[in-house]
Length: 566
Image 1: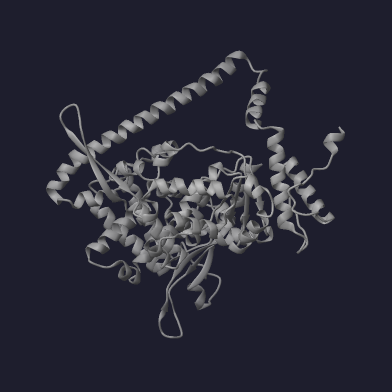
Image 2 (image 1 turned 180 degrees about the vertical axis):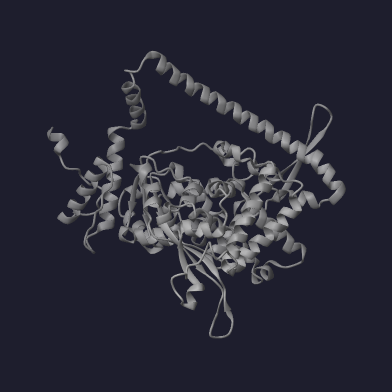
């Protein structure tokens, strides 16, 4: 009993701590032992960051020393707890698990076979028919074709089906996925996530971390934005974060053909398979990515500047190199956006279950949450999106499946409904925010609840949840915008001229439309939709209209982060 009551020790603290620091570290240590949520504060200048590091990471070390196989122990405890169940019930559970694994294996083998069949069919039958009609044009455009999609399959995951559309069939396994086959890495389910709002605060955290032994004893990974970690000068010169993100994704989408191999089949036919590498020169050599990861492990804790410098030295992308190390990390340091945005968590592969999350400067959390989920789209962006969707559907309508055609048409209906609202063409009976006021200006700017705004659109027959799921799973945004790039290039418009003409904002327009759509599936009280129509200015010109969603309550968003941890 006396040993259990002995207060925790913090030998990693670089000097003799003051009593206020000891109290803070013990309070955090006790909170981690008990689980749940703890809110801690300490006066400015009392070494709060260093106290956080020494307490939280010491707790991690002590926890692993006490129960190195805690996951296996918890699983065995669950098995023991179920011993009171009848034998037939336990046998059924085991049998069900075995069947589930068998089905997964069969499904995987079927998907591999299906992918090969599709590659053969698209490479010969469809390709031959199309080459007669369009020459090489179809083979160039096939990468923009959306894979087969049926709404009945939404809950199953459609990764194997959505690759049916073309070049991505053979290119994905030769690029980023190559390391997952050749290189096995340790996966640590339990880790500590430390997030702060600004880059300078993260740098300060690293400065304090290096004063302790944890910087060299634990695996530390820092995640930053593309703007801070990109080393491709052609991309960096774009300046704006949004344009850098768009260009990075576009480079990965546009695979560059390297080599092709011809394989002879048993029936005498021959199949040509082309290997492809990333369009970004910093991601073409997987050997350099492996070297980058080895150097990260050898050098210990590296902040954003160190990662960028290491990437330049080796000649490979530090952004994706650091992302690939998250699974093996003990401590992950990241900005607010990477933790709080659901899309960012999914993209980074962050598993928050049973982990520790430390949010620095948490008094900024509410404002950060609401500002991250605000979204705005202008009338010109909506018109561009609608125009390109129409061109895309017209070009590929004979190749798209029924499910894709239906969802693209639904997306066009929704986009045009937004345009009608901004132009003031909706029915007066459905939208009249000025019915209790005679002020003329209120017809230009007004706000509505989510339900009232949806009612004004007259889209009662559209399932927004399914449409949102389709946009996420089908990759329709990049398919359509990629086709738009080809159209502009075919008209001999340079990239710079295209961006000056407004095309550079097309991808962000699609993404904002997706964000607006996501916002409209929130609870009615979570936010408001602001409608701002075109109105004259003092200079005689018209101010462009826009739709803007403003998040008012972040409880739902934060609960998605909190619940897996508890």
